[in-house]
Length: 293
Image (cartoon, rainbow, N blue to C red):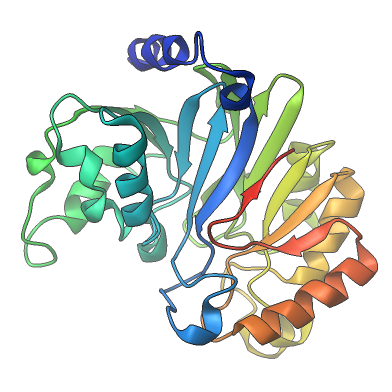
């Protein structure tokens, strides 16, 4: 694993920057689950599929590559010119990878990326991403991406020092499995736990992983009633279960995520209001908004 090459470069870029650029924050570029849902009635909470940007000490960390990563790529090019970043995949279901071929910085020589994901059998993250960029699915192969890219395997229990942040991975309860990531920086932490179906073992594992975190991003695709009626076994959770996990783990802020595509802003605002009645620092994740631990 050649993480150290990118780590040194990213870490050095934060040297000499203002304190503002040393802050630790999270921005959502995609909050929706399953498929994009762009329409006027989703403008507030967003219609792009999962993509998160975290900044720690001036270093860029990207989590998942749903449709939101296209706009993130354009923003990074505008901000930095030459782009370096660390990209982490929770798993490879379509809504978490289908934006990757449209991540324009990956096509530019001189840009540098470390890409992390869990192998599937004999296939590593590169082979899996290359598969969706092969004919007959996509006309441009992964070889057209001219940036310097290092592909790195991770799995449950992995602990990595990447730039100034420590990244910890843990298993989630999802068909084919997904990973949760805990990002730790200067005594603060953000936990990204999407695509997770609640249950005794799954909850216990996630509670321990998220314990004491400043922000927990949790899969709240459904309501309890929706999950019980039709969606058991689909690999997702509810906003009511999110509150149980947040309370048990002692997290400071809960962000409900992976919004169901048919749910509009009015419905999400209702869920947000009900969630805050049970957990004061709960909110439904909004695309474009920055959250600080």
